[in-house]
Amino acid sequence: MCLALLAAPGPAGVGCLVQQRCYQDRDCPTGACDEATGSCVDYECLQDDDCGGFPFECVNKVCEVACSDEPLTCPEAMVPICGSYCVDVWEASRQDASEQSAGTDGSVAVSQPGVIPWYSSDAEGGMNRQIAASACEAAGKRLCTAQEWELVCSTLDGLGYAYGDQYDASICNGIDTFCDCDGDGEPDGEAVYPHCREECDASFHVMPTASFPDCTNEFSVFDINGNVWEVVLSDDGINHYRGGAYNCSDSERLHRCDYDGAESGNFPSAKGFRCCADGEPGS
Ligand SMILES: [Ca+2]
Ligand SMILES: [Ca+2]
Image (tube, rainbow, N blue to C red; front, side, top):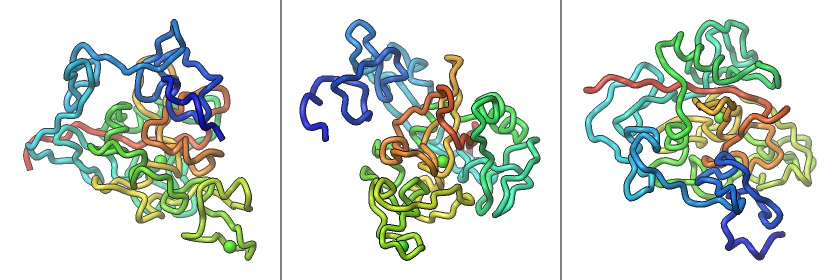
C-alpha cells in the first residue's frame, strides 16, 4: 500500500509514486513533464492546435472540448463524436476474420461485431501506427489521434473507463475477467473482482469484438477498454497504444482511458487499432 506523499505532483496513475520521476511528456498521461524537477505539471496550451484542433480548443491555457451541435454523417459502422469526427464502433478487424480467427487479409480494416480483432503481439512491426494507418486509409478512413481516442473513451464526463470511474473486472475483457476463484473450472462471471488474477486461476484470452455488451458508453463504441490495445496517431516517432488489453497484468491501471501505452521493448503485446474518419456535415 502506498498511503502518503501522494500530494506532490508525480506521474499520474502509476501506483506508488514516491520513487518515480517523469522524463518526458509521455510519462505524464494527463499533463506535461517538468524535466528540471521530474514532476508532472498541468499542460499549458497556447493555441487550439496545441490541443489537437476542433473539437479540442485552448481556453486559458487549458485544453477543453467544444462540441458542435451540427449533425455529422458517418460511414457505416462508425458513430459521430461531438459533431467533429467519426469513430469505428468496434475494434478493427481483417475482412476475412471470423469468430475463431483474426484472418490473414491485410488489405483493409473493417469494423464489425463478433470477430477476432486484427492484432499482433510481435514486438517487431506486427502492428504499429503505419500498418494501422494504411489499413484505415484503404477503408477511406484514418487513424484516430490520441485526443480523439481519449474523448471516445472518457466522454465529456472525463471518466476513467468507458463504463465509469471504477474499474470493474467483469465489464470489459481484461486479465481478471475469467478468474476462477471458486475452483470449479469455470470463470466466475460477475463474481470476479479487481486483481483476482493475482490470487486465482484465470484463462484470460482475446475475444471476438462486442463480446461484452456492457463494455461501452454513451457513444455506443465497444471494447475501447481491454481486449486489444489500440494504436493512435502520433508525431514523436513512437507507437502509442491505448485502452489496455486482455492480458495486462494490471488491467485496473492499463485499461484507463488516460493511460498511454508507449511502445518500449516487448511492451505492449496484443496490439490492435480502430479507425476514425472526418465524416460529412449534415444528416
Ligand atoms: Ca468458477
Ligand atoms: Ca480495445
